[in-house]
Image (cartoon, rainbow, N blue to C red; front, side, top):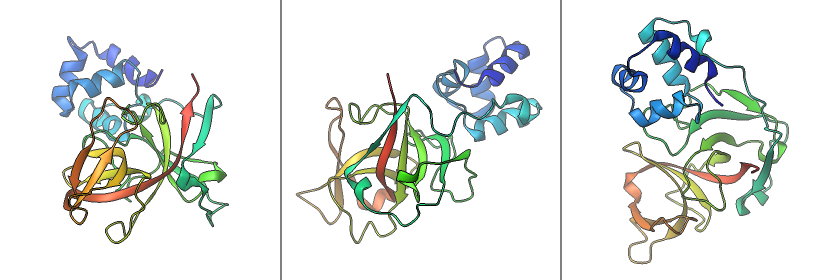
Length: 224
C-alpha cells in the first residue's frame, strides 16, 4: 500500500469527510484524493507539498521510505523500438512516480525542472525517462501500474515511425498512451490514435493540438 504516512496524518487530523475537505482545500478531484488516501496510487510530489503547506505540516512527516528502484516481482518488456541500440549504457534512468495519463494536477515529465523521485539501474533502457501508466487502454500489452521507459521525440512533426507506442502530451494538458497510425484521409494534419484494448475506440487527433511526443521503448510489468 502507498502513502502510509500520509494516511496516518490525515486520520490524526480527524476531518469530518477527509476526501471532500482535502479535495476542496487543495483543488484536486475527489477521485484523485480518494486514490491517494486508500493507498492505491502513490501521492504525487506536488500533492505532498501542497498538503504540507496548506495544513502546516512538515513534508518529511508525509513521505514513506523509497521503494526498491526495480521491483523484484516485475518483468521487463521491450517494445519493437527497444531493439534500437543506445550509446548510454552507463547512465541511470530517472524515474518520476507520476501517472503519465493523468490530468494537469500533477507534475509532468515534459517539465525539465521537475526532480526525479529516484534513479533506476536498468541498462536495457539507459538514456530513457521512466514514469508510471495507470490507464488500461493498452491492456493486455501494458498493464495498469506499469513503469514506462520513453524518450522524447524532438522532430516528430518532420519524421515519425508509425505503428509504435507513444506517449502524447497535448497542449491542453491531456495525455494519451497509444499507437500512432497514419491517418489515411488527412495525413498532413491528423494522427490516428489506436489502443491495444479493444474496448477503446480509435480516434483522430490534430497534430497542432500536440505539445510533445514520447517514444515508448519498453515497460516494466508487475507480475500477477
